[in-house]
Length: 219
Image 1 (cartoon, one colour):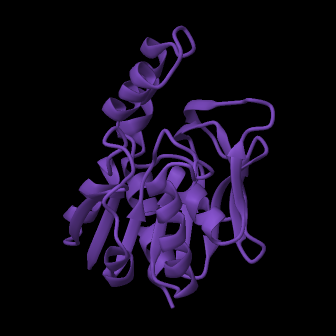
Image 2 (cartoon, one colour):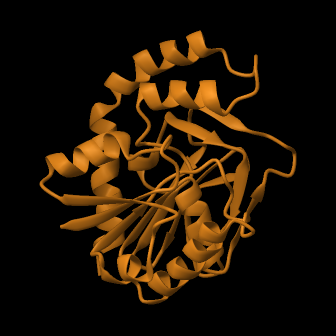
């Protein structure tokens, strides 16, 4: 299967998801959010939209506004799409929902569980790194939520997760160092949590990645 990976930040690559997809024999082509074109969105079998330090509401940034418009057309055509964090947020916004900063200013960081999951494959803990919350589109199905935030949302041939199953320990440490105010995250504790959870959840990650691809591509 040909899969377009949209890196909306070079600091939020496809990580473990990309490794799994390549291991399954899928052909990945990587582009940036800034370089994404209509031909990309219309032509690829599957599009995987990744995270960003920006919000789906940052439409003053030209590439964010363009991605929302391109994604709206792809979703309307029911072309297989997977969104992770920013990718899920922009998917919800493009389909008629919304994504906004958490009204209480909460920012979720680290390995966190899932309070409610419609499918066991979604159960955590998973890495999370977000301060925005999704309002699902009217016709969407919410498949997971936690602490008042939507953690997985499904549309016809499209699936999004707010958490970061693709994030490796190295990616998480990079976010703690680059995108976090001083003294907010205990980086030693984060590294220790990653050392516990990341290897232990290898099978859970593989099952989730297979589920995401199936949800996006099933008729």
